[in-house]
Length: 236
Image 1 (cartoon, one colour):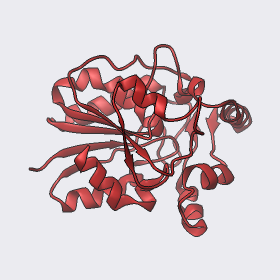
Image 2 (spheres, rainbow, N blue to C red; image 1 turned 45 degrees about the horizontal axis):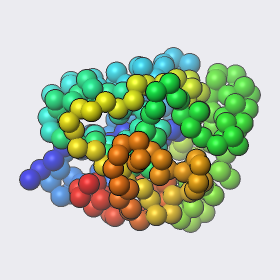
Image 3 (cartoon, rainbow, N blue to C red; image 1 turned 45 degrees about the vertical axis):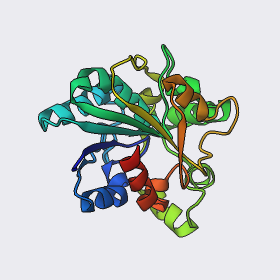
Image 4 (spheres, one colour; image 1 turned 30 degrees about the vertical axis):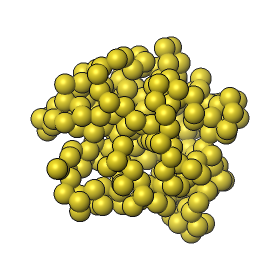
């Protein structure tokens, strides 16, 4: 049976991120949308939009295409937009999938959820940028995000990343309500973008009240393990 997937990226990424996964889902007969979110196109003004605009964009993407029985997937920071859009889209959703994603709590932004070294990095980057944006340093990208990738691949993809509007990290959305929509939490077996322990990914699955479903790869398995990730999305 054909399914419809709407895949929402994490910070610094555009819809192109999902192409290796989307190709595999489409080859299996499924419909896939991979929108680039406002403020994350190449050359975009990082000051133009707020997180509420991103939430509205995700909802309008689904509504404009009149999609139903949608599997809405959020990666990393993308957990904020999909959580914000879910109440508006509830009647159109088949399931929600959080892949290595933040799950919002009341009054807590992504900035509140990351360890102090990330907070210091984001603050310093935003203050130095001149436009309140955050650029991800290559060393952090390589060691914490795509730690299962070869260096040439990591460098190439890093060049494609765009500055992230800082307000997307500091603004909040309401927690996920009980919408009657099945929800899954996927987590890469090599995902160290957040350190284990107090700041680890496991607390977000606990917020959803669901077990973690492990998948191969790092935080960027969309590039390093696309076939396994596509299979996990189909089984979620």
